[in-house]
Length: 439
Ligand code: ADP
Image (cartoon, rainbow, N blue to C red; front, side, top):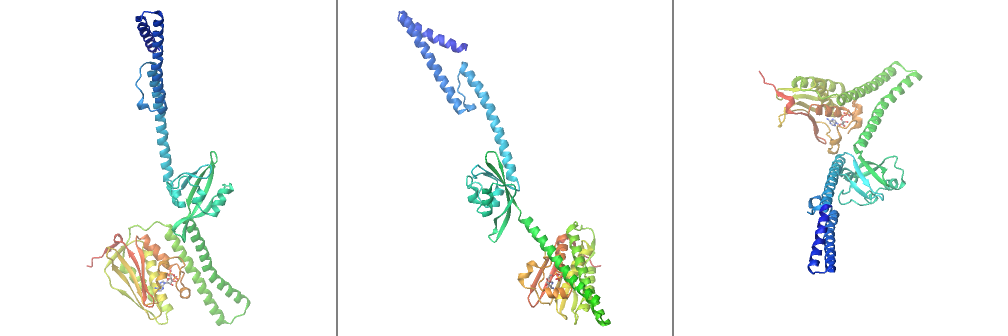
């Protein structure tokens, strides 16, 4: 204040002195007045600079003015700096927050009061098939053209979620997207999306599985209870009784096999993969399953099959012996059951180019059409339903083989030509195979 007063006084005094030089009291007064006016003009200019700068509120470009205005500027500059820092902090926090929502596995969309997209994360854009940059500001109802969604959006009751089709890999294979709106603020809405395709698929598979198991168990049960009823109501001679009991025993056996396969599958799915632990002689495994197959062909084929081992390298394989035996014997029993009697079946171990080894079973059976191959390892998938049933198949054999192979880090492979035969392979990785040095 002192500086401003001194400036004013100096200018007034300068004006008055200049007027006094003109040697009249009137001029002296006019000079003083002019000095005062000049001061207020200069002060006005300074005030204008300050006001202009405040308009821009840029702390780095503060005008350099001394005195009271300088003090005003300095205080304002400090205040602006504080506000700038605060704004920077909240910007950074907002960015962190948005980055976190971007990373969310769920889709998040912010809708304004009229239903236009204000912000969306990439997940939501992918779920609903729009562009998160280009489509900002678009009405969501124009982007999600689904009657159920349009009705939901317009209905105003958002207490439940709805499911709509999202863009899938193919138009015939849409993804299933679950979405729900949550109102907030002034008529704004938070829209959340979730991809539930896998959940729905798992649920459908579970339903199919339960239906299949029930069906598989009901068939022999119906036959069994039919026989029981017959035996209870009709007097039978000894021969018929024996025949009926034999058929009943077959049905009971069928149920037993099914339950046993189901238990094997659930054990395979529910337990950790076998460790590297036990090293097993591959030839021992082969001899065991070949013997089983030879027994089976004698039991079911009118003309027994020609079953033999193909000599291969001496090998040790590591894994769970019971699992490997069960997988190998499933392949051999399939070869016996699907190849007409007298057919040729060869099995053995051989090395693979990748350093691993494989157990193979080749038969001269009916072969399998190419369109069935990708589905063979699905539970209860059968190409030849009646042949499978006749020979006591459960439809779970190859599913078990696939699981065992995968648990050992390997896989099942199938090559087949209709009318010529099939080759099924269990391929094991190099880490599970050692060549035996013959001594
Ligand atoms: P199943 O208990 O019915 O044999 P699998 O899972 O073992 O069930 O096999 C699935 C289907 O694959 C069989 O129903 C059969 O139609 C076909 N299949 C399996 N092995 C052979 C084979 N060696 N030759 C021809 N078809 C086969």
